[in-house]
Image 1 (cartoon, rainbow, N blue to C red):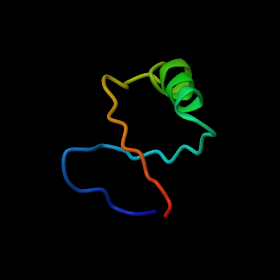
Image 2 (cartoon, rainbow, N blue to C red):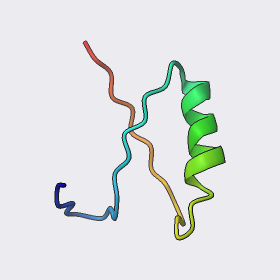
Image 3 (cartoon, one colour):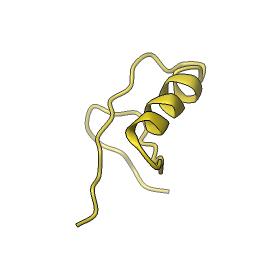
Image 4 (cartoon, rainbow, N blue to C red):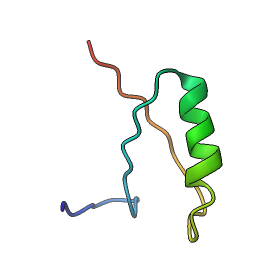
Length: 47
C-alpha cells in the first residue's frame, strides 16, 4: 500500500474503453460507496 498526501483521501484507477464507460462506472458505482461525497476524474493517456 502507498501513503496518499494532499487533498485526496483515496485514489482509484479505473480502466475504461471510452469516456462513456468511465462516466457510467463513476456515477453508478463510485458515487454510491458510503462516505463518498465528491469525486475528481483525471484522464491518463498513453502516448
